[in-house]
Length: 247
Image (cartoon, rainbow, N blue to C red; front, side):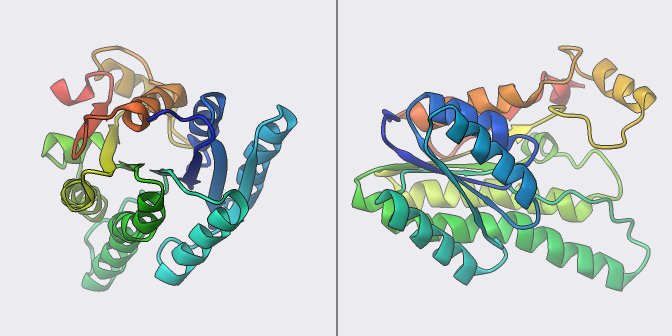
């Protein structure tokens, strides 16, 4: 897909959104960046793009609600008259020890709604708009553990299952929406250290990664660019993990 004058909707991604927005806008896209609670980071990213003479907007959207997703899509199309690309960076990642059934059920609902259900609803909502222009690209975010088929860490079962489900959404939607819309996913590994991670724990991650470093948000942005430009890759989940899955 040639990205000149195309419109890309980026959901969430306060930490990776800036790099993805920058890469797509540099290649010709107008950017719509949605947020639920991270209003200031989203507006900062949009402000930076506007200051550089690029076209961008920030809009609120609760991705757990289909009505909110539909309103956001209409708002984007109302401004830009089209919608060509969806990059779904939004995600929740929380540790949930299975101490009580109530706690486990609450975590299950939160992760499945925010991660997997939202990916499915987003795909359904944007597809009709993309079909109007005879083509589109959808990119979701899975996880290197789910892409590797092993949960790896105790206490993250709800998160793991929700990310595994995103792969299912990606594959099913790739089949349902072909041939006009290509649907893929990225499975990040050690990209950005979580807030509060100790130097010792960060060093352990680096040691367990064959490429011996954190990837940085730009690596996700490059993978996104490939998946929105390609005309013959669909239904894939691509690991961007520095070889972390090999250990």
